[in-house]
Image: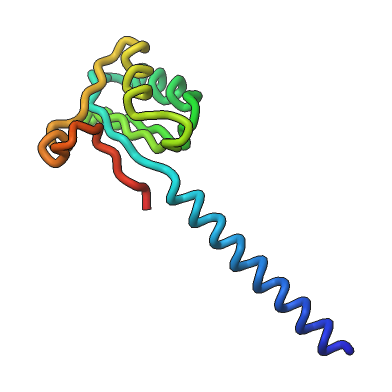
Length: 117
């Protein structure tokens, strides 16, 4: 009887582990990344953009790189769009454009977004 209980317990634990791994994978695959070239020049600009954009709907992560003047945003495309995020940055008083490297590689006219892996 103890062996049967042990086997049932182990089977349940393995099933729950597999289910948890699949759920985590699905959550990671539903996010996209968008990059914008901005005119941010100082830590104050960085803090302002990161703190405001973090509260936009669907945003998981936002990072401003002052050396390259780029904002990288990880977001849920079911809750927000790259265009809305671009407008949110512009409302803060900054320019927000698709980097030239993305414009060359993206002939569809859609903002430079990629699936986050």
